[in-house]
Image (cartoon, rainbow, N blue to C red; front, side, top):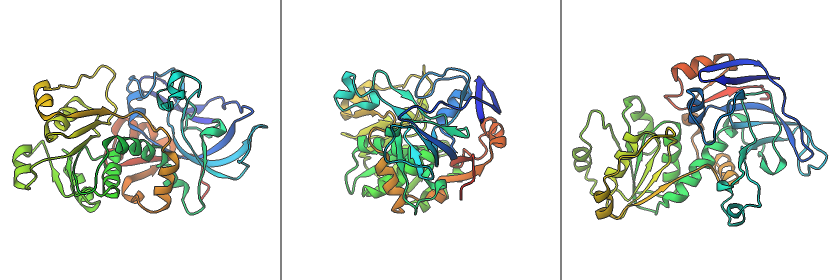
Length: 339
């Protein structure tokens, strides 16, 4: 099969690659779309994603597609079904799984290499799509499901003031989820001025550029006396530092962005102590895939704003090198046209 295969740091090729074997409980899916994730850029640069990288490996894990074959033990799926897939498999037997923390499974592994013609995940990872949800929009299911876990951890209460640091594809989804949760005010902290108009259109109350504005002065001018919840979406020490600094007394901060493996967050310990901050991290998407599908189907997410463009596999290397479209939102790679 054809796949976008990473053979080493910055060595990405569209080439033939062995199709994954179909297990007895497996579902063979012809991939329609695969989203380009920040972890794909990490892997392309020779760094770890959510898990260590073993070369050669096809990139991608945010998929939608159509079932073309099922294993003999599969029930509930048939050829022609439109589906999406949770890429994270857990054993179900370790202490973490038995304690309801399957995303922290001791033996977890990825079961989707989505920049390829076919994937063969186990049936437990496959989800039906309603007819009203396009395969294009359904490719947002996995990133949205991860965002839902982060929002659950942030625990926004109706009427609270929320800060979001970074307004790329993930920050934009977080903004929309905060609106769904009833946030009273949503302040975006973002250095890319091109994102101001889009953020305000999605419902942000204020847009502050830390590169050109003094953050404290900007908050004071906006009449923001406290920020109750802060979601960090940049994955950089500087964005984590900003998230911790703007958090108000008693605030909750979620460090959501995927950082470099050896990155260190600069923490002013005394400030965190006197503000009694609750600091959390968010890892993948435990039991949130069905909710993500429901939100997409219900029209609660502006997918046209979230998706910056759709490209062909042959354009992937240029995008990985330039981030021309990824800087504006989620890039989808069209693998096969079903619609």
